[in-house]
Length: 168
Image 1 (cartoon, rainbow, N blue to C red):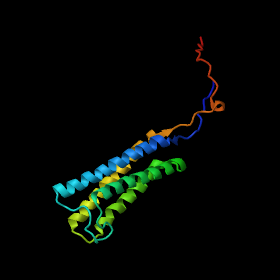
Image 2: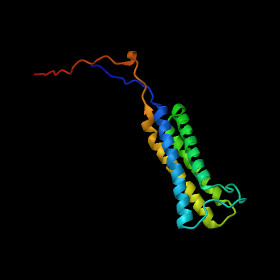
Image 3: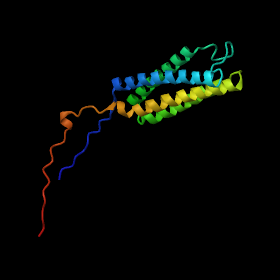
Image 4: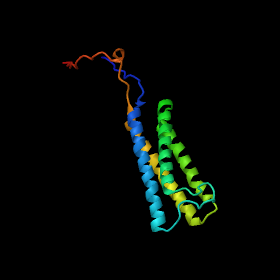
């Protein structure tokens, strides 16, 4: 009886697939920022960003917020790529890192000296963008992995065809 031992070659990220997914995630994050700002300003009549001179956000515009969201998604893609190459259980570590970064992004606006409605709206938008980036990148991570080809010396010998032995 022949025993087959599978080669222990770990999957590696396919950079083209990973960064294509990261680029798509950046577009979704930017659009989520724009939609969130439009909903907050247009429907709820709440300013998403702190007024000029009011702290960390200054007079950032909608375009700058959207571009910043896209840039954060690309940075997160870089972090995920690094973790996939260097770390066991990379997506688990990536998830934890992203959750903690998202919490920081939610807490910062709550510390500003502006109306409570502005604080809450900005914190909620940051939460949505953080969750969008985290879930999209975590979900594309397994799809962006490929197994290296098996070397010729790792191919197991062909097993003999199964036979039946009858004891009579």
